[in-house]
Length: 60
Image (cartoon, rainbow, N blue to C red; front, side, top):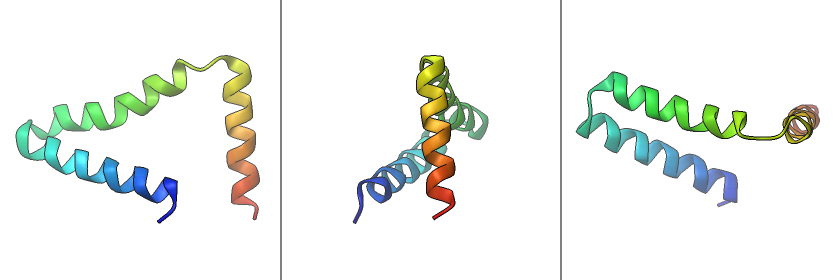
């Protein structure tokens, strides 16, 4: 299993656990808000590099 697949599986597991313990809208805010906050914490040059790499991988 690749590293990205492990991260995705962990994210799904955490999301399901949050849905059980918390109201759905709080779980949704956490699941969407954490990656968004991490992206916004990057420098502008790191954001450009991330977008460039993502587009390059989509073209494969």
